[in-house]
View 1: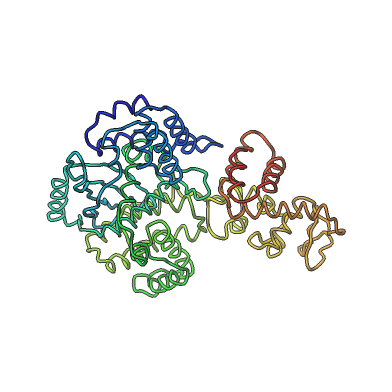
View 2: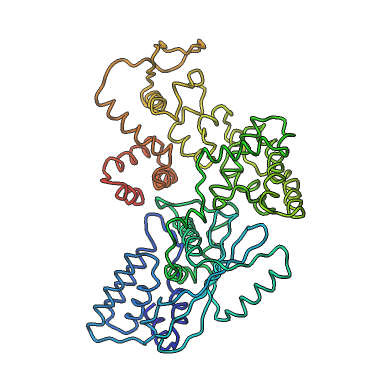
Length: 530
């Protein structure tokens, strides 16, 4: 990398150097190695090597990382390395002092009528202090709202006027295209969120990690222009003005539970929902539609579009939500009613509402085919699925089955309230039964359920301090697995299972790490090392 940096020393313009160094830093962006923080390992390693090189190329690399680095601690480390090399008398071209020093001039948003994607255009200049004159340039970042708000693409152009004129002409001639000026502070709010979402998706097993949006692969994000421009995009967004205190609320409204319930009630009381025969099932389906719009679509549950319908029906629901059979049958009809109700209220013309409804009906056959009912392939009863997934989060099924395997059996079917995994008392009762074959309840069962069927467990025979401590330890571990906190816990469990260890050995290893960790950060490091 230092050898490549030597060639950059001859560049005239800061922008050329920024793009080149951003591509350099993007070569390992998104790389995942179990147990290693690749970004930190290579980033800090490059800084250390550049600082120890004693060469102008090393100083150039440090200047680029100080300006474009995505992590504050590494930018600070690079600045300290620059100071040390400058004290040795090393000099770099004038452009090195201009890296990252830009003035935001304007911001625009280019989108379609449905609002599926936003092309955020930010225009920057260098100001009058640049030694070598440089034209204005625009950074274009594409935000995909149907993929959870991740960045899908990024590029830079110096043909700013041609770009803006083309956007204006298209908006004037295409009724489905929108182009408008955007307050730079609001642009910062939107782009900061998109950058964070993208980093959490690419970051893998970190504490704030997000799963890859349905229908996307890691290569879709890391294999093209986005990786090459991600460091530059971070630096440019930092250069945008800070938003007002209330600006974040304007762009990303907070949808609390009560507000979602009011929206669902308004929909269910509408004429569009009057033809839905089962109001309870319709209510459950509406809750999922609203949850998708609030949590995935940047707080916009009322937005409807053909692409959003496909993303919701064919990717998000099959991968994240467990529907009862009657809900599976009703969902397309409830969604169609929602489109007829929400579309006109958001200003969508009749032709656009019709196109969205066509997509709903055309997707029914595919939805029936791709929707994964976990009760069938896993041999589970619907009753067990409801106990394991009271929140409907399909992604939690495997780790909850691992934490509480008895929930998938008939052994506890006669005492569902006492073995409720959503409560601390129920989790403790399940673990006591799982580990020691003992059943503890307010009313003695004498080894039988009220159904009269014999079972293998026995009443608690007495206090055993060692056993109670072991049970409390397993309870803490199982509770973390139930809620998926931290994400590294289940990732470590899967790695150990893949190595051929049985469940008891995996639980023991995880319990030892949980006991030894001094705080959450230490816990995540220890889990990554398993």
